[in-house]
Image (cartoon, rainbow, N blue to C red; front, top):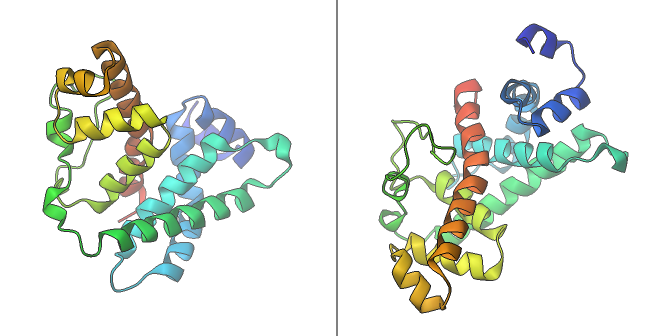
Length: 208
């Protein structure tokens, strides 16, 4: 569908398209709700939290809200989005608070984690080139939130993998098959990638 036609649609129609994988519809929703995100982010802005980071995390909350919105609950999406955005920003600030005394140099390198995947892969992370991958609190937060959506054994597999353990080491330590390890890692990449690609779009749209 053309951008012109998308602009004529109501938010509810855009949400259905976005839920089905329409990237332009999702981008249109992000543009429409950018003022709300910036307004909410401004309420939480502080000396130890960059406004730009809060805006990007606000977009994460919006994106998650789009995917989880159910119009049968008879809740207006604007209300649902406001609550999701606020909740995500609060979660991020809690996460930052835990990191205040932590050295960021040990943050995971996204590039090294996905070096075996090509740009054509469904699981490739399109990280902006100017981003310092070793000090990106936002991206590491998204990783943490992605892990939270997984089952207990899956969380353990991912965390061991993020600690640079091989498939063989993970398989032996947890007494599971390498196939289980591989399936879990690819699931994690898929979950994180869905949010990551839209956050990168948010940066381009106006989350700067």
